[in-house]
Image (cartoon, rainbow over all chains, first blue to last red; front, side, top):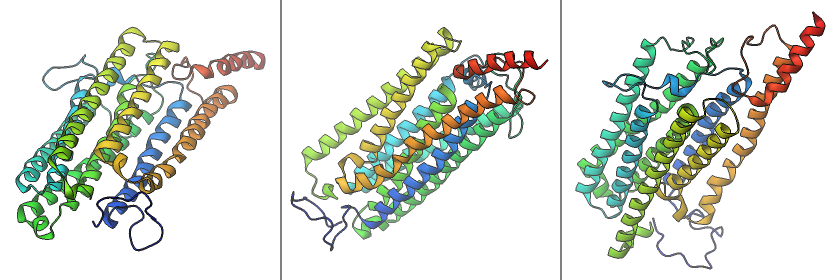
Length: 225
Length: 146
């Protein structure tokens, strides 16, 4: 990155430098995330469309009301835990990126490890929840939950959308954890130290924050609204 | 990056910003959860209060999204060109959401009005209070047919 201070009369489009003032890889990560946002957006909007087109829909507070070892009747509790795990892991990722800017290898390693732990914890939570719902009889093509007015559900849309969208998000978390583990190995091997910069961590960080961002939407659309 | 010439002050400022945004995100989440719980306990039936709370939760969700993108993903500190190339295409979502949700709603109304043999019979329309008149219309119509 050749850019430090930006003069006010800078001509961005006259050639010779990136008009976006970032390196190529980071710009492409942004474009990838934008396309991924449209994929998730398509999923969530189709969920909303079907929900608007249905006469009945299960109440999320009745469906998601269990907590491991504490039993049921606790709406919102488990998903709040999952949300906070993801927010905290996002914060540790920001700190890892900042440590990378300052080129402090041990700090990068420390915060990356915390981020990976957060990601794995989130995945374990999701695995528990999926397992729990599966035991209650929910799966793709099977919906045991009555509508919020107590009538029997005539479609399996609720389960289908829930497992597809949280599954797709969980897959993103999984790939984020794998990417972060690769970043950790590269940091430990001193790859970035040799390169002279930690910009790779920044790109992995963008991806990780995006996973957190998507969860904000999934969490709201499925558990709250 | 601008931060390659980081001074102690800048580092301190950046740390403060992370702390601030973390607190904002946590508080917004807690408020969302409180609203969700309130909606579940106090307003079990559809109505203005429930829809109002849902709207508030969605606005809070967008605020959270803004803080994550602007500060954690650092987009707020990039130059305008980059911000625009990312944000402008996302404006398409405004049209997507309006068009598709309106379509879903209109499908519901049409089915309840015209296709009474295939709709989910025996269920009061809980999810969509706007479809209520269509259902009445449907009942009136079915009486005249029978």
